[in-house]
Amino acid sequence: MSSSSFGKHAGGATSSQPAVPEPSFAERARTLMHSGRIGSLSTLSRKQPGFPFGSLMPYGLDGQGRPIFLVSTMAMHTQNLQADPRASLFVTEPGASGDPLGSSRVTLIGNVVRIPEPELAAARVGYLSGYPDSKYWVDFEDFFFYRLDVIDVYYVGGFGVMGWVAASEYSQAQSDPLVEHKSDIMQHMNADHTDALILLAKRFAGIDAQEAEMTSVDRLGFHVAAVCAGFIYGITIAGQFIQNGTYERVLVIGADTFSKVTDWNHRDCVVFGDGAGAVVLERKDRENGLFSSILLAEGEGMNHFTVYPGDAYFTMNGKAVFQKATTAVPECIQEVLRINGLGLEDVSMIVPHQATAGVLKRIAEVLNMPYSRIQTNLESYANTAGATVPLLLDQVNRRGLLHAGDLLLLVSIGAGWTWGASLYRW
Image: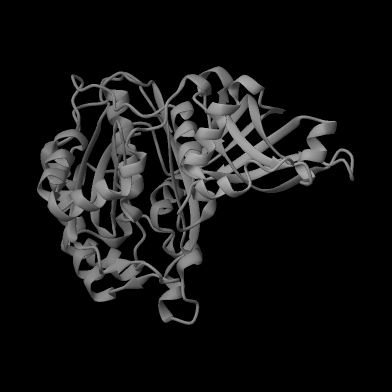
């Protein structure tokens, strides 16, 4: 899927705005290693040659981010390392909730060596600061300090976020200075400074929010999540990067697995499905090109569709969802058309989030248009949340229903509430 030339995004970033910086993979890896403190060390088994042997291992870090271990000569790892120093250390994000595959993790590969005498004092101080109880056995004759000399690093930041990091980049990077205070910052900002978050969302993200919640923070900024509306948010942000010249093309993925939080004994279980879809947005200059989006958010609906802490399944207020969707979506469609001086008659196809058939039919009634103008795939895949729009877009394209110059209207609404619409010239 290629985009046309990008016009001004309604309420979004202009071409004069700088690109949004992100921590490098090297920085993220160092931050994760700093906060993890325990990982799975794998060495080559002496008992079963060629096979890896893994077990949990506490570690400290030196100034270059190299893991330091305190290991007994009786440990299996020590025996393995005496024969072959090659090893890896796997560390996952501490305290992560939800799908573990969506959490950050890092693998350090290298050679484990005994720390030389001149460096022992510094290693001892650093290790004991993280594990003070080890003072009871650190001086035992059969315990020695070892270090993993890193030769390569593989970082995974969640679904689709991954890559190799050179050992030199890793050793020179620094952990995020906010990592120790991240939870306190988010709690304080969400409790006492929602007005400031709203202003930041409007000024820098182009989101016309009535409420805002900080979900993650680092030295360069913070993150928000938009659930079912996430794909519309994603292509809007991608469009801004293309508009301001930062990137020529951007991959946007929409994916959800509601089966993991669905109570299959509840009647709502038939409403949702799992799915994933993706598009590539690309700069392409042409005379009638158009890309325009609006994004909105309103935190007063956060409890009407959510997974409460400690719950295994989602909770949904069906009546509230229906009322909000059938009011906000038509208004959003009319607003993005008004901003661009267009009417429904100018739109070739409407590709909406697949909430329910009842919601979509009511939206058509409010807009005073035939239901047949709305594309659907509910009958095949149900509501796949953030994947509905890209999945449906792919289907209509494969059916040969899209033609060059068609004006598409993509629209979605999700929990929170979060919603938005995009006009796109095919």
